[in-house]
Length: 129
Image 1 (tube, rainbow, N blue to C red):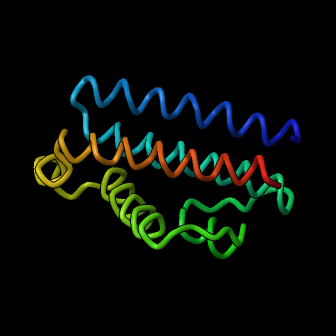
Image 2: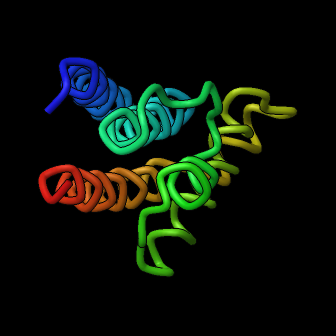
């Protein structure tokens, strides 16, 4: 594994840890932001390993499907698309109360578990490459 890939994975692990801290503190905004960042950084590590320096983009589906050309299950693609949308909402919420209603702690718990599954899948792809 390339040193740069390992670095991406270490940062991704930190973001997942920060997401859990935000989740435990019942902070949906931080939870979503760090969940997205953790998946993005694992994908950038995968890009690093497969094609070289990853592009400076944040869209998870574009990174996975268009750039890295990984084959994810439809449910995983649907999830990362939803996580992309939630991330945009977390970065630029028009109404924080509405955001926290839509992405309450229970839904954030589900996002957290699904994120861990996607990361596991992506890391398995790294092992196979």
